[in-house]
Amino acid sequence: MAMATKEPLDALNLAAAATVVEREFRLADFARLVDRLVAPDGVAAARIAMGSAGGVPTGELEVRAEALLTCQRCLGPMRRTLQSTSRLAFVECEDAPVPADHEAIPGDPRRVDLAELVEDELLLSLPLIPIHGAGEKCTAQGSQVMRDTGAGPPSQEMRRPFAGLKDLLKH
Image (cartoon, rainbow, N blue to C red):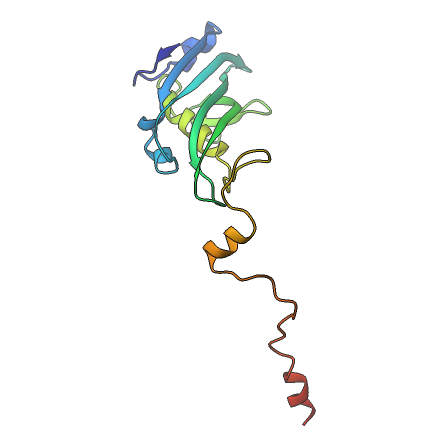
């Protein structure tokens, strides 16, 4: 797979020839993604199979990358696979009809920025709250989490801040 260049794709010609394009992108080159990573090392592999449906150029985009994220439970690094598959339709305006199950990508179909599409897919595949999974070593456990957050052990007595209000309303 070739490392990506900044040259835009011509979706019209690629779709007419039913071309499959495979590229790799450095994670460090994605400005919107890099601040969500512990380290911007690694690459994203992208594969887009071009075609057409109803005269509209389409592409099935598959993206995959290994990313180093911060676990929100222990604040330690954790590796996650980010992957996504989407069906795209390249149209000149947002109002243009698109084939069913396709997402409209408005703009000039002769100048498609594949890097931007790949970055969008990676951002959408990020976990909402990254935490170590079952079976992975996470340094936050029970009392350690309470100590780090300042929370004490759960109280046996439930606080009822408005319990005295009932007595005041009787008078």
